[in-house]
Amino acid sequence: MSKLGVMFVLAAALPSLAADTIPRDEYHARRAELRKKLDGVLVLFGYSEGADEVYRHGQPSNVLYLTGWTEPGAMALITPAGETLFVPHRNARREIYNGKRVAAEDANAAALTGFDSVQGIEKFELALRQALDSYGPVYAIADAADLAKLKAMAPLREVASGAQMIAAMRMKKSPAEIAAIKRATEVSMDAHRAAWKRLTPGIYEYQAEAAFVAASLEAGCEGQSYEPIFGSGPNSTTLHYSANKRRMDAGEVIVIDAAAKCGDYTSDITRTLPINGKFSERQREVYRMVLGAHQAVIDAIKPGVPMSDLTKIARNYLDQQGKDKEGKPLSKYLPHGVSHHVGLDVHDADLQNAKLEAGMVITVEPGLYIPSENIGIRIEDVVLVTKDGATVLSGALPRSADDVEKAMAK
Figure 1 (cartoon, rainbow, N blue to C red):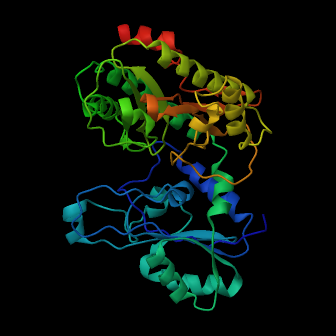
Figure 2 (figure 1 turned 45 degrees about the vertical axis):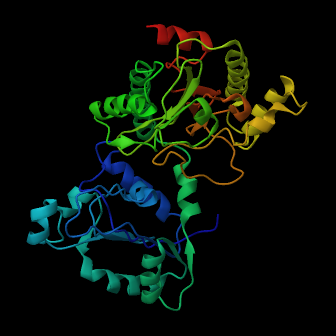
Figure 3 (figure 1 turned 135 degrees about the vertical axis):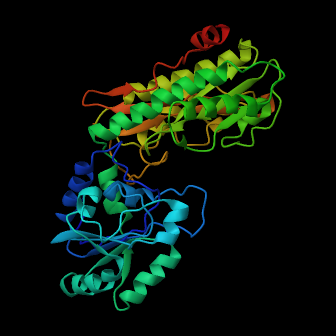
């Protein structure tokens, strides 16, 4: 990657610093690492809060990753020479609705934000012009409206995306990030177990989902990593089914793909279970093949392996198990890739053609989906790449057909 320079702009989101999960010093270290590679200007925009909003916003992940700052209306400037956070001034009327925010006039603003310097928001444009006098390239993470604002402030500069530069940093997780993902994974496993207890013929998918969501919120997590998938019977063959409205019947399986989001970090776990507690012979046969592909992928994980190879390994394993009734390879029933990065986003930042490194956290999620038989089987775990291979972070949740049945019997 060529040297990139940086100016960083954000309009942040939630009403606090995300320092309970990641130490403030780590955000500062990330910015310092980025500055070493910069010779231009990088601009990132979050969102601005409305005057009377009563719902949560999520800070754009690249902004959160570099700053940890979650309050609305802020902008930050990072160049090779230094960093400054620009925040709004006190607004008594808005604070009646949204609570007190850190303001530019606060004497302890720098200590609270973790930035070397904090100034009023109105000083940003001058700082931008001064930075552009010294640094040429401009990079941005922004939506269309904010990108237009940036181009208006620097009309003669070409603005490129800074996403890849940040993705290169985000793929390998720090110890604090790994701990946060482990926490989300532990809560998610407990929530899965709570949902399993609700599985019985005659109840609705949303009733099992309700048990999952309640358990994750009760544990102190802020929400879900993604829309929970509780697909029973024919819905088990739809990869991202999330209506969760169907009644479950005996003799069917349900694909539960759900995970809690805790301290801004995600997890991603899927299990397939028999509604009446016992797999049929055919369901068990399909399950066995998916579990075998799952283990084949885990066995192959180690530093240096191209991540793109993992899907090939799963598909090759399935094709070795035989053919379908029409004589076609079984991998035709696996239409998706079997791995992605996990972090601040459930499909976390990555680079194409990247090789695995120790410290990466990825999923392993092969599946077989056979609509003609109303059978969909997916098994998904969160895996930490280590220097010697892999550690399955969600391995405590029953995975084999026998162990799933035993767990449901309890």
